[in-house]
Image: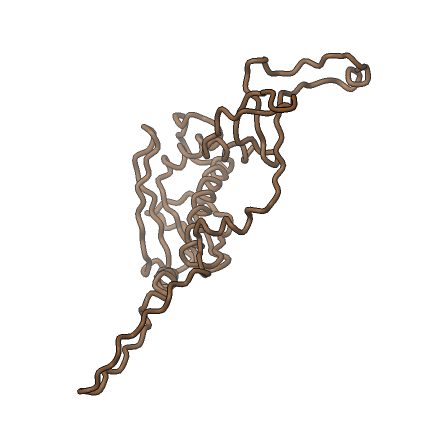
Length: 255
């Protein structure tokens, strides 16, 4: 897999994994159980593996953006099947100089292997420089005071409170943003002719039982489940009985 930095860093990443592992990942990405991940990778399977690596490197780029305090973006990955003993892959830089990082990869009982990330030395140096920037690596030593002269202790500067990067305090910036809350009782599918024949008093059957919880959505995204209750002044309300876990909310956002 070949992934290039397009913003924040300059250079190319190579992600190397066994073809059998890539076949399992491709089968899982295509909705399979991973047990049919055998044989050579065709173009469709390569695209599936590329999408998996794109999501992984995208998460890594987001983490680097937080650590480096700058935007880091990558290009869509390219996938190639190579034979190391045949030398049929033209590398983007001379591989005699490289930095290699090995990641353990375990997927249930299907994969227990490694992914190897190969990057040029200049990219590794740039990452180290961004990590150590502003941590005292370039501080100049203060000149020694003259003998016999007593200097008062230097007061420490007050802590900066205005610069909070990646902190929960940033949520204060959006606390007054209005959000639309809606409760979905259920849904139904009707033909145009049936809709035109509706009249006062007609009953539309929904795909939800009376005892089933209703969905609570924020700006169209389900975030909780609840039950309908009657509150003060005979207004209807919803009592929250379950908050969707983050994993389930992310899956719903992807649909």
